[in-house]
Length: 276
Ligand SMILES: C[S@@+](CC[C@H](N)C(=O)[O-])C[C@H]1O[C@@H](n2cnc3c(N)ncnc32)[C@H](O)[C@@H]1O
Image 1 (cartoon, protein in one colour):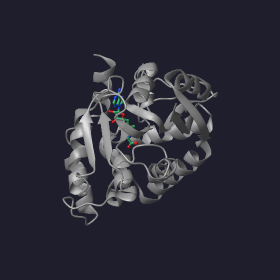
Image 2 (cartoon, rainbow, N blue to C red):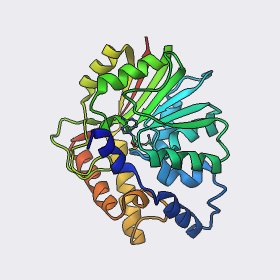
Image 3 (cartoon, protein in one colour):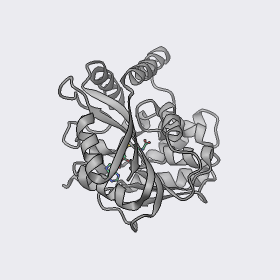
């Protein structure tokens, strides 16, 4: 197995759409006609969900003309948000075939397919000509990518000079080794976290200037605590949520995230950079 097949096996679920449709019906929604808000509890697959996506979008400069690249787009929540709320054109790339297929279908059901497209591709070997994109975002994907020189080198290559690059990733904290399973890795074998100084060096070497670093550990603790409290009060997770992807182990992943956050083993961090 290569890293790519391991990562795709971790995230790929053939049955996800059927489970999601059943959960949406349980909430009285028509799964064939959706809004981005219907999907937010499952398609914003990162610490602080929609709250973080709003922050990521706001960290992009106003008035972008041209397509935005979303690297590791999952089932498409951040890409659809940028299109629906900001009118942007977005291309998402993801390694996992089921994620790409699900992202396309959900985008069609939200009526956003004229502005958002998804391609199956590896972020370390992007199928685009140099200077293809006006801006880029990447949300909680680099944790699974070992070759970060290739990831950020490829990102720099496909962006036009002066383009904004917004990263929201889980970085390594000073508190020691990460406790697994987490939503990005069952046992750490597909996990490649770097700390903030290492990420800044990687970005500088790839041709980016880092403008701002925002540690979102405290906000993430609050968010996961609220999620755990809601589940405890309701006697289980809400119908639509990430447990549809991972099953019962998601509760353990969430609890490990809280422990990792409280013990400073991980640090969800937003970085604003610009392609020199
Ligand atoms: C935790 S999910 C985040 C999805 C999405 N960015 C979001 O925030 O909702 C991580 C995604 O990164 C993708 N990914 C991991 N390694 C990748 C690579 N080398 N190239 C492209 N996508 C990758 C996975 O397939 C998965 O869909």
